[in-house]
Image (cartoon, rainbow, N blue to C red; front, side):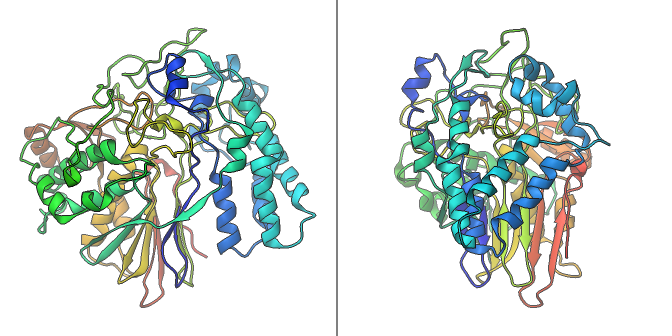
Length: 558
């Protein structure tokens, strides 16, 4: 998450845990793996989101832990109304749950029935976890002391013990085999969330803040740096082509240079001289090449699997997985809400496959208040198709380690203690040093494509009554491309591919195809899951907007 307290500086609060001490390339290679699996305990980093939320509550909140958790307890214990897609997703992995991940079946298929609209869905184990946590810290005096006690319970108490037990259970994953994880009590006890400075870039009077290059966040900044001083007409074929090709160059640099390494040459990657050279690579035709740059004269190096194409066949295609025991596929479950291949029947809004491979459960939340406090948060990782539910706790481990390569010596190589190069990248934008805009989206590799389009539409658009036209920018036809290795198993690429919404001007689509882009026209409302909040520093007026796609976004004021 990225936050800007009123009167303070923007900071990133990182809740992405690192790789466990036993998560070495040699260990995974010894298991016969060429990729980190997309599911199962081998894909689990040290769980860190809870600790980040606790730091946020301790340092910037006013409520007690009990005040905050009572809502989570209530929804888990008494139930909440699920949207239709929850039931569809559970049905798609029913066989996996009933034959392998039986603890997930206990939660999501009680009595053999999946969650459905019109019935409340309950998670008694999760409610019991939060109630026990509150009981264990209730004897600690003081708001902040109780929060610290809760952090300790997570790291070394009953929650940590259950997480370690789950990691040690042999679990079917995308390799088609059962594996145990590497998470230990020492891994949990030694990790904590942390604050850090954001990566920033100044563009046309705006300062855009992102998580650093251990994430994919600077990809948005690089796309801005690649823009020429004069832009083509917004929404024109020239404009869309320019942004697609700039994105390809930025994503290629992501693959070569980003990671939780000692040195990432971000200053050079964002420099005027470097981007002038890179901008010259953008021609009139679509590029099908993966072309990382050489910042400061450094020689780029990519994974040996960086150019593996997506293939028609099982699930997402192009991976080392296959049919698991019992005759069903257990392929990777990633965050993206857009399939990477084979091409879905409705591009841009695919069906949920039987392996759960095309849909994750990432969320995004933006908040601004009357005092000017602003935050953008993108929690994700423990979706129901990624790992079995920990039976004692009611939630699963995450799978972000699938974003690390099993090649030695890369910035994003699997390395104990290092964070995987995550796709999660919320955004803040400032004017004259004052935070005015927070935004973000689910979507995996699409996140910093959709966010770039949104930000430019806001920044270049006319103001509306009340300030920035957030809703118009969210509603505008959007697109994405897959001309780079995916962050999620099986990490395949679709060179030249572009998926656009059917509301895109047909003349623009035709011109993109003439230029060599492999264009798929998807559903009218399929690209983007954005939401945003803003505050006008002169008037104090607050505004918010939410995504209509999927009918799961909300803008709420009080």
